[in-house]
Image 1 (cartoon, rainbow, N blue to C red):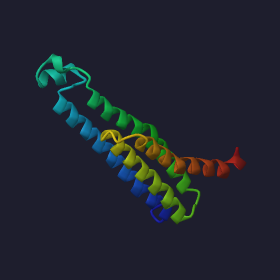
Image 2: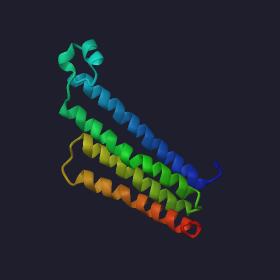
Image 3: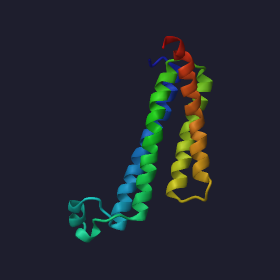
Amino acid sequence: MMENEVFLSFTFYSTILILKMYVVAIITGQVRLRKKAFANPEDALRNGGLQFCREDPDVERCRRAHRNDMENIFPFLFLGAIYSMLDPSPAVARIHFLIFCVGRVVHTIAYLLRLKAPARSVAYSVAQLPCFSMALQILLATTPYW
């Protein structure tokens, strides 16, 4: 498997995306601390009192960005892994993975920095293109076996 150039490329971009998700989780925690907005009473008590067990719009924005990552990156991980087994052109596969990765990074930046519309939706849409392409190729390759 480590001789599979496509899978190695997929592994590289997937790891970048997972690390990006960790960064968003860390940012969420830092915003919680800065805004004193804790989800759990025990955390609020440790940081000033139960009045800080509350929601905050900035924390919720970070959480939405993280949730959106999970809704999009997890399917990419499945599609990319299966697509890698189809023996696609390494250059074409790398373009698929790169476009998705850059789209997701731009989407997160647009979300967290509140960039003007349509920056976030364009980034989302661009990132979906390689996923649809991979899904279609997987279906075309597996249809004869159903």
